[in-house]
Length: 111
Length: 117
Image (tube, rainbow over all chains, first blue to last red):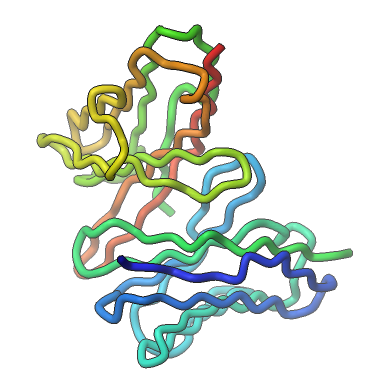
């Protein structure tokens, strides 16, 4: 069974710091990797996706993928209180396979 | 980014009645849509995968006769909760998938909060 593991947290960082969120996955055939942000009581919002080994940057967010280690991470620079949310890692095989979600890491950014 | 809408955003119904939830992709066509359920403080749970023009594929443990899914067009999928009971009260979220070459991305609707009394 395909699994995605995340540290449930909570992860607490001060405002302005770098928040580092980690995720490992079990299926070596996984090809697409996604980070979603979910505020309490709201639906998930796609913030980053990555397909190739290495880093992908978008504003304050950087996704890092290491397929050999089956590891994907999300770095949030200059963290803001508005970044406080649960971050879901999701992994997908080839084609239109369903996403497999981790349980999420709750991030709190303290002013 | 791609926009997905859901209607209604919340609904209260009496036990035994049926409720229909609509999911629309507003600015793209989605051959595949997904329906999830989320209970408070729990993870997303995939209920079914819906492909336009064909029968939905349900996850293990999800009753297909209770949760009716219709994907009538490339922009609309509906979930009908039949004979709802209080234990069906939950946050129902759909997502729609965009495809561009080898890239498949899912965008979520805002969710529908169902309360069965």
